Length: 226
Length: 266
Image (cartoon, rainbow over all chains, first blue to last red; front, side, top):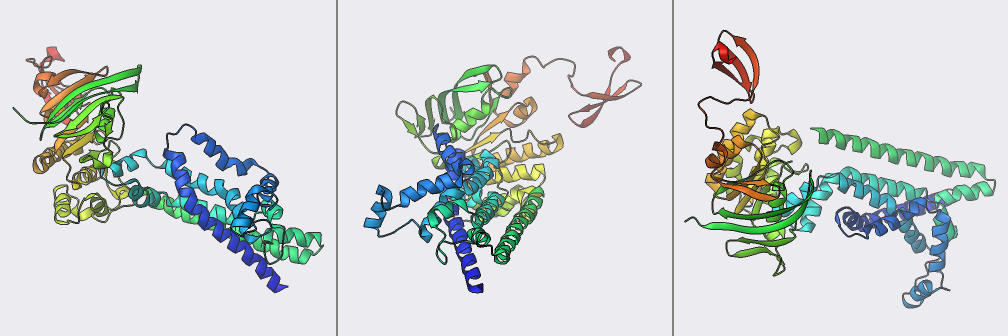
C-alpha cells in the first residue's frame, strides 16, 4: 500500500515540477509580449491564455482527448510520424497541465512586468543594452516576487489538478494517476482511510506552499522599502 | 561660427491638456553646448528628448547628429536607441532597484575600464555609497547616480529630463553646480528640459522656448527672460514671515532673506 501511495505522489510531484519548469520558460516571452507589445490583436492572445481560468476542466480535457486520439489528424500525425501516443500517457497529462496552468504563470509574470516603471526598460536601452540583456539583467531580477508567485501557484495548482488529468490521463495507476485522483478513487471504493491519507497530505502540502510564497514575498517587500 | 552637432526638424501628434496638438520643432544644437528646452509641463519637451533618444518615434522629419542620420522619415531611417550614443537622465531617474551604485556604473560602461568608473564615483560623491542600492539613497544621491550612469557610457549627447524637479532647493543648487562641472569635464553636448527660469539662467547657454507645439522664442537665456524683469525694484516671490520696524523677513525658495523697506511700501 505504501509503495502505491508514494508512487502516486511521485507522479504528482514529477508532473508539477515539469509543468512548472516548462511553463516558466515559455511564459516569460508570452508575458513580455502581452505587457510591452503595441500589437492591437494581443487581446486575443490574452483571452486565449486566460481561457483555462473560466473554462470547465472537463471541456478542455475533452478537446485535448479528441486532439490526442489516434482517430483524429493531430493524434494520428504524431502517432505515425513521431511514434508518440499522447492519450492516456504521462506526456499527455503533462501537455494538458501546461495548457491548463498557463494563466497562473503568465498572469503572475505579466503583473510583475506591468508594475515596473516603463523607464527602466528605456534606461537600459539608452545605455546601449539589447532587449535580451535588458530582460535578464534588469527586468527579471526586479520582478522576483512575481516570478516566485508564478512558480509556486503553478506547482501547487498542478498538484491539485483533477478534471483535465482525469479526462486525458484515464487514471492509470503508476502512469497517470495523481494524488488528487487517488482521493476520488479511494472514496469511490469506500476506502476512507486511504482517501484521508492522500487528502491530508495534499492539504498540508498546499498550505506549506502558500505559507512559503507569502513569507518570502514579505521579505522581498521589506527589502524594497529601504 | 560654432559647429552644429544636432540638427532636427520633427513633427509628432501629442496629447496635451488642450487636446491633441502637433509638436513641430526645428532645433540646432551646437557641439559641447548646454541648451535648455523651456516650457510649461505637457507641451512636449519630454517627448522631444525621447524622440532624440529614439524611444519615441516622430510622425515625420529628420534628425542628424554630426554626419550621421539618426532618423529620416523620407529615407525610412530610424536608428535604434542602443545605437545612438546618448546618455539619458529620466525625470524619475529610472534607477535599477536590483543593482548597487557600482553595479549601475559597471552595467552602463561600454568596455571593461574601471578607471573611468572610479572617476565618476569621485566626481559625484558616490564613492562611499558603492554598495548601496537605490532604495537606500537620498533623492540627491539618486539624482547623482542617474547622471553618473548616463555619463558612464561616455555619451556624445547628454539628455536631462527635468532632473532636479523632485529635489529641495538646497540640494538643487548643489546639483546644478555639479551638472555644470560634469558638462565641462565630460564635454558632452547637453540638452536639458526645464520649466524653472532660475535653472535655465544658471545652467544653459542657449534656450528654446516651446509653446503650443512650436518654438516661440530662442536665444541666450538672459535675452529671453530679461525683457520684463529689469526694474529698479527687486521682484521677489516669497512668504513674509515677520515684519519688524522697517525689516521684512521673507522666505524665498526656502532661503530666509531680510529686506529693509519703508513703511509706505509695506
